[in-house]
Image (cartoon, rainbow, N blue to C red):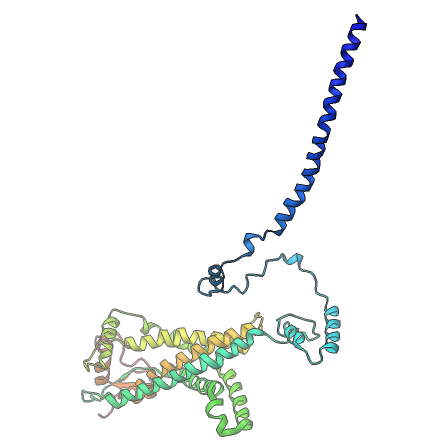
Length: 410
């Protein structure tokens, strides 16, 4: 049995060996052709240009168009954690600058960039900002002060008096239409007049000194020269700083004294809508102070006076517990200049009506008394309250202790 199986198995094994011998050349040819194909594919892929590297003409034009693609100056700056910022090696930067002076003599651009960087360096001076040599915002403040404030403020202070002068030429002094009665009414008490004139004189001193310091180099410096103009501005600067607190104190006292009679009322609406009767010439009844005087009290004295005083105290460095940085002083200077110019422009109208604009107005503040005809013509509601006994005609008690009506010849 075994003898029969051995010849059969040997025949089959010989057939399998012949088949493997025939397939071996075909497998080798396939194995050699596959590695050869892979470098060809890679070489073709490398030689083919990428599609993204070929921008079209339209896309390039759109990118360069500032209307569709505005410039972004900070687009390339990435935020960084402050704790990850490496510490600067000042000594290495100094050595680099020293070596640069050898290869590039006269090139101090890195030095000035460092000075103009607002970077705080070491200084033995006790001042908090002594380590900053140049403050970049200081240039912006200087341009705004010498440009916007000086130019526009100067034109405002010229045009407003010109308009008032034109109005005076047109209307002249507003006369008293009714004849004087000779019976006088006390309009301002001695205390009210003292406070008013203290405030007025301080305001004029501050206005004149401020105008010289802000605009003087344009019209006084060419006439006086640098030496005299320097001494003048130095003197006025110190006078300005000393008179400022006096103006603030008189402003506070004046507000307390006059605020009661300057409260808004319904009668002020009719006065405002008719512009006080200046254009039409018709009489408009009002209380002790009309709407125009109340507007000056609240807008000029209270609001602008408060702003000017607060910013002036900062510039005088008399506010306790405040750090006077350069930026703080620059902001205070801008606010102070704008508010002061607007306040001066409005005060021109108040000064005009209190002097040559209306007959008897200046005498009321100088002597304290007005004629009954003047009171009835310009402040009829106030005059009616006096006649009704609501307000005494003479509020100041004479030294002898008896109240008597004051009369004068018409």
